[in-house]
Image (cartoon, rainbow, N blue to C red; front, side, top):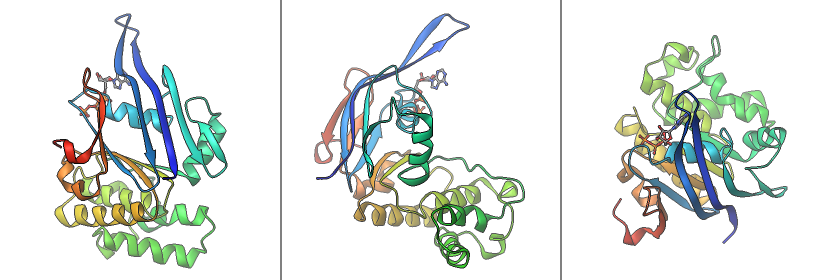
Amino acid sequence: MTPVLDIEGLSKGFTLHHLGNQIEAFDNISFKVAAGEFVLLKGANGAGKSTLLRTLYRSYLPRAGVIRFHSVHGPIDLARAADIDIAHLRRTEIGFVTQFLQARPRVSAEAIVAEPLRLHGVPADEALARARAALSTFGVKQDLWKAYPTTFSGGEQQKVNLARALILPQKLLLLDEPTASLDANARKALVSRLAELKAAGTALIGVFHHPGDVEILIDRVVDLTPEITQSEDRMDVDI
Ligand SMILES: Nc1ncnc2c1ncn2[C@@H]1O[C@H](COP(=O)(O)OP(=O)(O)OP(=O)(O)O)[C@@H](O)[C@H]1O
């Protein structure tokens, strides 16, 4: 199996300055993810699932541990890499889907979705055609393609968000509750796009409010609940 991510002894805490103490988000987490693997993160509220995803994306720096990412340029420790390298990896190899679209004023839905393709060198016409196809797949009405998502409903914004985030295959894709606020058809479209990406070799790590949505994709479950943190074969776990 081609390795994508090796996480060793990863810990993260937050300092609450006004209380003068530390909150432990997660402690001493270790697991590996290979190309084409889907890892489900689970754990009680506050177990650290979102914080772990943000730490892997380097929105947060860990307190300790190694996040070895096998980039096309060679292995790199995301916990220690320079910001400029992280910015490059985010454009080219590591994707992050959250529940929230960063809609920009006066940028149309189709332009937002086409942008990653344009940055990747895809010609404007082709990028636009692929963006429209992706919007259609996720069920965004054609009337809205040229509109500005700042005024869209929560579910419509999330569909634009997903169309954009999943339009280019990445080596590593982090997913933080991407099905929140989606209707049944869009959830189905999401699962089928994730299956395509997995088959193409993307490594996926995700938190899902309803793991049953993605059950057919899950290879392993990592449980962040304190005391019983473990990685198990999916056949043995109750998700
Ligand atoms: N920016 C922050 N500053 C201080 N504490 C934080 C911060 N972000 C998260 N925490 C704390 O870290 C712990 C883990 O939070 P996190 O959001 O990662 O949990 P989660 O497993 O995703 O929870 P949920 O299932 O409720 O979404 C919580 O106790 C939370 O209060």
